[in-house]
Structure formats: C-alpha cells, structure tokens
Length: 506
Length: 76
Image (cartoon, rainbow over all chains, first blue to last red):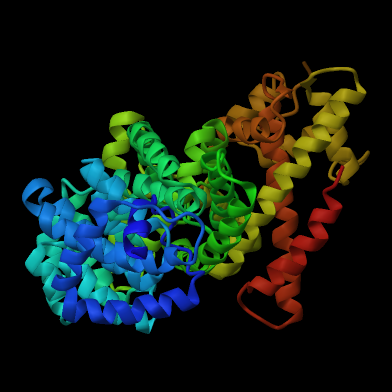
C-alpha cells in the first residue's frame, strides 16, 4: 500500500513545512478518523511499518505520510513495551505530524526513531511538537490534541484524541516516560505540536519540563532527520532510504551533540534574523543531506520549508524576541564555525521555535517556558561545551560608570555662587553641562599641548585656556584668580610663597 | 564651607576623555579652578535668567539657556 511505501521511505520533513495543504486536509480527515480508529490504524500502520516499502516519487507520500503518522502511534503503542515511552511518543508524534500534514518527515522519522533509541531526540520531538502544536491551526488542533495526548502512553494516545485537558495530563505522563523517546517521534511531535493549539503547548510544556535537555537534543536531531527523511523519501528508493536511515542513525549521534549545542544557542537567540538564517541553513542542510538526492527535491523542499519556517519563525520570532532577545552574532559565529551544525541548527531552531512558540502562546508560562527551554537545552549542551547563561542578573551586567565629579560638590558650589534656591531638575542640567564642559576642556588642553609639542598638560596650557576663555586678562592675572577662589593649601601649591593673601615677593 | 577639590576624580575624567594625555603635577588644581569659574559664570547667567522671568527659584529652563551661552563661551 501506499502506507507501507510511505512508511518505508525515510520520513524526511521538518514539521514546519505545511506545504501539503491538500494532504494536510486529507491527513486531518484521517486524523479525525484516527481519533476514533486510532487503534485500528495502529495495527494496520504497524503492519505497514514493518513492511517498509518505500514509494519512490509518487503522490502517495502524502497518503503514506498519513499512514505513517498513524503507524508511529501504533508503533509507539506496540513498542511501548520495548521502547516504552518512545514509541508512545512516536505514535503521538506521528499523529501530530499527520495532522500537521508534514508529509515526509513523519514516516521516516518513525522508522528512524524506532531504529534509534535516542530518547533525547524523542523528547525533543515531544517538546518541539508541543511547541508546534500551539502553532497549528484550528483544524490541526483537533487532530493534534488527540495525538499529542496519546504520546504519553497507549492509553494516553487514545486519550489524546479526547479533550485537551486529557492530553495535558497525558503529556505529563508522557514526559515522564519521554526519556527513551526516539528522535523521529520528537520531530513528528514537533511538527504536530506546532500545528496544534495552545493547549497542546501546555501539555508539551509539561513534557518538556520533564524531558529537559535530552529532548532538545533529540528534537533538534529528530527535526533534522525529519528533514532528511522527507527529502530523501521523495526521491530515493528503498535502498536509498535504508542507506540514508543508516546514515542518519550514525549521524544522529554526532548531530545530537551539535544539535544540543545549537539548541542551547538557538533557544536563546530566537530572533527574526535567526529565522532567516535558519531558513538559509535549512536550505543548506537540505543540500547537505540531499547530496545524493537531486537538486529539484531540495529546491522543492526548501521553499516549502522556508515557507513553513517563515510562518513559524515569524510568529516565533515575534514572541521569542520578546522573551529571548539574545546574541545573534554569537549564534552566527557558531553556525559558520560548524558547517554540519548549521544544517541541524536550522532544523533545531525551527523545532525550538515551534516549541517556544507553543510555550509562549501559553499564557503566563510563556516566559517561564522559554527560560525553561533554554535551560533545558543548556543542560545537555553544557556537557558538551560551556555555554553562557542566557539570563544574567542585572548586577552582573552592570556597565562600568565613568567617573564623575561628586554631585554634592557641584550642588554646593553652584548654590554658593547662585545664592538662590535651585530646583532638582536644574541641578541635573548643571551636572550634564559640567560633563560636557570637561569634555571640551580635555580636548582643548590636548590641542594646546600638542601645539606646544608636548604630551603633558602644563600650567602654561591651562593659563592659555583661561585667557582664551576670557577669565584671565591683563587686568586680572591668573594669580589673582587663584588667590580668590582656591583655598590656602592649594594656593600654596600653585603660587610659591603665597601666604594668606599677602603679596610676598618671592 | 567649601570642600576640597576632587583632584583624583578630575584626573580620571580627563584620562577617560584623552587617555594619551598627561597632566602636570598641580595642573589639576588649575583645572579645578577652571571648573569653579565655569560654575560661577553659569550661576550668574542662570540667576540673570531667573530674574528676567521674575522667578525666585532657578528653574531648568533658566539653567538650560544659561548653559548654552556659557558652554559656547568656554570653548578654548
């Protein structure tokens, strides 16, 4: 069947792409069915999954995707015993993905996820999916809800289809089990989640909380895998798919680390600009993975991804910006530094963005979630590389204040001279004025000393300055000013043998 | 009662603006003198402005207008 073929194909596709409007509709319908016939489908899907007949280049992928989506759920259910949560997550992810109409990624993800026992990915997927869920449209909501909830357990899955609150509870359960999730599931979840409504986000939030870091690793990894799978699945034959899957499996380990790093960085950055970068990276990643693949697929996928990413990223960017306005330059640097990482980064970022979106969309938890997310990603990343803490206390970032003349001194001197009450605002103006005055003074003194060929400011320079200012004239020598304004000890220093105003010829 | 001149602070300020510039031994005292005279002129100008407005209190606008004039005058 197409399902089998779809399953066989590596489900490459980032959850973000919603290109398949029609397939999405079909999937949504199928998803609706899933709710009721989840079990039936699961079994059927499971069968198909095992068959793993990849369909090369035909429209069935979408359909297959649909099936695949279900299968992951089924697979999850079946594999629960084996992989425990992972399967459940996968299935839930599958469902979610299906709803989101993220075609290719899901089937592949499942397979890969199942193959790989990378719990972190799965967790990430869940977290991402949860984020994605929030982003999903209304139609997706219905689908996603049941799907999302189901991830936790087989029971949860069935419950998923039920109300969101049930999902939330299930998600909590899921999160507990999430640890052994596979990356594919995570990715799928991401995709589904992104499309799902906010309630899913909450659920996902719970999940994410539990899953910490590891999820992110898996999520980013899963996302990447999804992308790979989608692209690959489109074009590759069974052998190719298998080979790619193997590749992904091998790469996933390495990527996880990178992704983790990326995740940690990306979480913080989440900016609109990042989104753009992600898009570019996503395209690059596609290129990278699709080396064997034909370019057309890549281009086809890239625009799709970009479109999805844009939607997702834009929304996320807006929300993320509010929450995590952080070091883009740092991120850029890291990206460039690690070519491979870049590929994953875009994916991870999107997943993260989706996740964060979902998190953010949730009411007040947004801020906390974002922080929590960043923290989650940080934990695994910290193991790999030292990551700067995103949020620093205000005191730590206290900027060095430049030296200023004491405010009280200025007040005292000014009040003494003006002999009138002065408002507080007028004092601030006087302070600013004095600062500007010192700036002028230093530049003038520098000019004078340079003119004299010296590098040190001497008394002559200062006298010249005062003369130019009109303070010192022929009728008013400098000495008189010194004696008039400066206290005795200073007078003694400046004027040799000056004694309490008495003019003493030296 | 007048306080002592903030000699170190003045040196730091000038150093901030012109790191390569050095100051002679007691040059900062003359800088302080310069600063005093500047404040003196500023106060006189502000007082004049307040009198023109028939105010008994120095208001920010008086200070602003006074600052504009005096800063221009104080350019070397």
